[in-house]
Structure formats: structure tokens, C-alpha cells
Image (cartoon, rainbow, N blue to C red):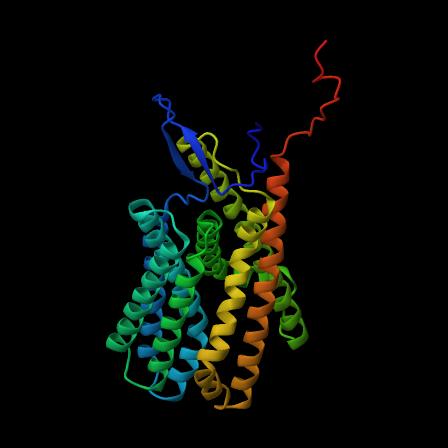
Amino acid sequence: MSKQPGSSTAASARTVDTGQGGGETHTAPAGYAPGTPLLAVLALGWLAAMLWSTREAIHSAAVGLTAITLSAFALPGVISAALVAGTAVALAASELAARRLGDRAALRFAAALGAGMLVGLGTALAVNLTYADNATTNTIAGTSAAAAIIGGAIAGARTPAPVGAVVAAALGTLLFVVLFSQARDPLFDLFGADDSQASLVGAAKWVSRTESLLGGLLAGLLAFGYLSWARRRAVRRAPDAPAPRWPAYLLAGAGPGLLLLLTEVIIRIGGRTLLDLAGALSEADAVAQTSMGTSRIDNGIWVLFVGALTSVILFGRTLGPTHRDDDPETVED
């Protein structure tokens, strides 16, 4: 049997001889996702950081209109962090339940959904207890809780390894966006921004595209790296375990972009009240909210396609040549 990462198998689990005689066997899980506790801790840390930074920004602003504007600007970061945290914690819970109680789809989904609900409840409580008591607080709390629960449902998938790859790649992409903000001013100068409005708009477009392109490349690299690591761990546990095929790499690479687009859907449904309040403050605020929403959608699409393409190309480079049965090199004399 081929040991290439792309070798196919129809079974989702294999019965492997333990070597102890008597035909004793055990079932090797096909979708084992390694490192889920670490991913959960990192995702919760990221969520806590987003909640804290948003709280500090709102509390440092003047009461009223400025706080509403800052809340609307900060909402996407909080929602994306809650979505990823809910997914990561739920994935860790489903993996633990599968190992302790048996690898059953219904059990995995129940454990994942329950964990997502706990993350959502904890996030909502943290927002309500630490933020100022106003309408924007309730919007942030409720929308964040919904995002975490949706993440829990995503983690209940029967193939946890690609979900783990999506979480790892999404965390890396979100961190990259924060770090990239430090390079925005030099890039504006590089792309020819000056005092004219046209040059600023053109430079902003190229800066945004550069961020999306690099974010997609990073997402694809991290997704491929995680799935390759998961494959090596699975082989050590059970040499005959099935290998992920190219759709798994495609989904994992596209996952961070899909989460960004899902974040936008959650914002526009759950956070509509806050966005409308911010947009109603002035014509400039309305234009800013529309422009930022369009930019977030464009960024999600770019990260989706570039990440998927990067991951699939890297997977393709791991495939060896295909030998036919009548190949002269494989035919015995």
C-alpha cells in the first residue's frame, strides 16, 4: 500500500492487528486532530485579548457617539475571535469525548455543541460584567455568544483533522492581521500615497490586497502544515490509517477565509442594530461602515481562494509519480 499522503481509502477507520496474537485488533481513528488542547488555550487567549482591547478602547472614548463608533469598528475582531475560540474549544471537547466514550458522530456533535455553548455563555457574561451597561454591550455580548455556538457546531464535524487545520490557520491569519497593521504606513508610502485623495484611495486598495494575499498564503501554509503533522501522528498510532485526500487540504486552506465570511454574516445579522446606529451618526460614518464591510468581504474572498490554492499546490508537490502495473520498471524479469 502506498504511504503517500494522497493514497485513497474508502474506510473512515481501520482495524489494525496489534501483533499480540489471536487476531486481536483495534480501531484506528481516521480523523484524529492533534494538539487540540493547545489550540483551545491559544484561541481562548486570543478571545480574551480581543475582549480586553475592545473594552479599553470603548472606555477610553467619550460617552455616547464615539463609543458607538468604536464598538462598531471593534465588533468584527471580537466576533471572529469568538467564532474561532468556540470552534477550538469544541474540537478539543469532541476529541476528548471520542477517546473516552467512543468515536460516534452523535457523541462528537453533542460534546462540540455543548462546549461551544459554554464558550458563548462565558463570553457573554464577560462582556456584560466588564463593559459599560448600554445597548452596544448587549449587542456585542449576544453576537459573540452566537458566534461561539456556531463555532461549536462546526467543530462537531466527523472529520476533525481538517477542522483543526482551519483553527490553526485562522489563528495564524488573525495574528498576522494585527502584526501587519504595523507595516501599513510604510506600505502606503511604497504604493505612492501623497496628499491627494486619489492617491490615498489607490494606495489603500493595494495595501488591502497585499494584506489579503499574504494572509491567504499564510493560511494555506499553516493548513497544509497542520494536516501533514496530523498525518504523521496518525501513521505512528496506526500505520494503516487512511490519509487525507486533496479535498481535505482544499477545505483546510479555504477554511480561514470561510470563517471570515461567516463572521461577516454573523455581524450583519446579529450586529445590525449596532452598525445602523454607527452609520446613522453622520454621512461620513455611514460611508466608513459601508467601505469597511466591503473591505472585509473582499479580504475573506482573497484569503479563501489564495489559502485553498496554496494548500492544494503544496499537497500536490508531496505526491509521487503514479506507476502503472505494466510499467517496465515494475515488471519482474
